[in-house]
Image 1: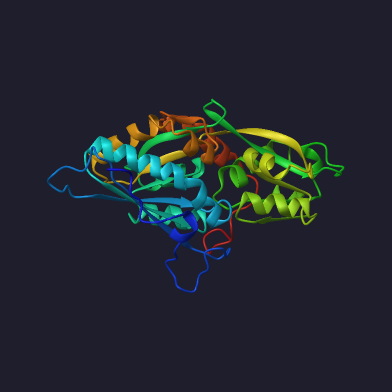
Image 2: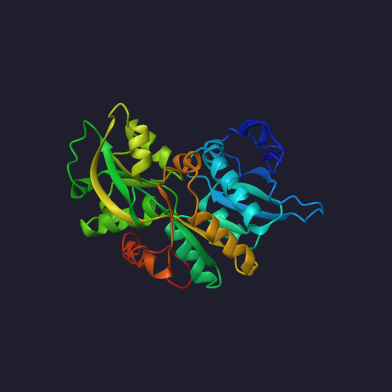
Length: 315
């Protein structure tokens, strides 16, 4: 039996959890895509109960673009798991508007597995050590990936230290590259929030690029893939590049061990070129909690960038 999908294309599969949200709007909180993968190996004479899983990801660019990029990987993953488990697998994909919403819904058990930024994994593991690492994305054949701090091509800023007295655009408040590691780089250059003329969290890497290109901010932090994809006209110039670890895929606490094993093995064995190209990765690699020490160190250093918010206990 050929692969069967309950939709014709990505756009027709997009829906919202709230009827007043538009699929192409920046205010969308969640997009849901159901992928039913059934292969001849899994369909026997006696019907097998389907396995239903929910996958979550945060919106680091337009939600519809995120959904489009993950569609091939979800299809490939569902197909592999169907074969491995010997029964049909249904995967619902939820694209959340913010990193925080995705983190909270994951910890609440609303999704079975997620693709996180490294900092989101660190925060999730702090709150519930029972979450399970499945695999990490491998970019450019390496365990590490890169973030950049960029300025307009005609900017007089030549180094991170030159951002003193300038404005700076960050990504999401929970972003590894867009906040924590970028702030760690600023600290290494002797720059704290008080040394900037202003700063803001713009939620997404693509928004940071556009804001710097438009001159709304003097500098900004973004993933190197965003920088390269959007900089075809050489509007921006890189002034710093820094290390990050590959994005982890993580299973919730309490998910059946059989499913964790099948997810992990299917991710590590994924070779579907279309799926990997859409994610802009070379494949998946094994990972362990110790791989994220670089991120923990950067998050700790970033604490020095800005004073904590005033509360009755620390005023």
